[in-house]
Length: 141
Image (cartoon, rainbow, N blue to C red; front, side):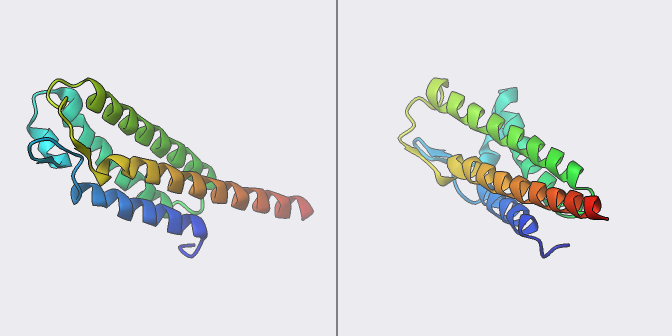
């Protein structure tokens, strides 16, 4: 069932999430990309790229779980929680980090988790609509 609208939302989420590796997060003296965070000493900064990779993989795998809609909803909620965690970490870093106090410009990549949240919410809404339709058809039998 790749032709369902929630599959399109989940695929767009994975594609737009992959743009995080192309765009920069913020700009200080130089542009800071996601993979630059791996070279830092902080465990929090090193975990951000792995969390982003999870937010790419989980929705893509969720596309192929179309026979189990409840598991799709759970995976969508998990992705929402991961994206909220990323937003909180980014907010925390830009507001309190000593190294990035002189952030002059936020990059596009800082706002990609917001786009991901919107797409996952739309996908979960469509999955719930499908589940409701299947339950109503089963009731009529």
